[in-house]
View (cartoon, one colour):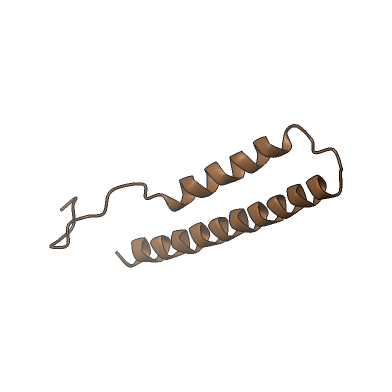
Length: 77
């Protein structure tokens, strides 16, 4: 039982690191995109696709994988 809690703790930290990294990539991408538009630099056609993939990944990591269990006990018990 303790090992399961330990693994869940590690998973929570990994999810947090992944979400923060994706958010950072998104912020950097939006700043770069804005700079390219204002500097009259030609924006690569796939740049918006990459930003959309980052947004989709961020939404996927932030959405729950399963509905929350009941407040009275475990759902699988």
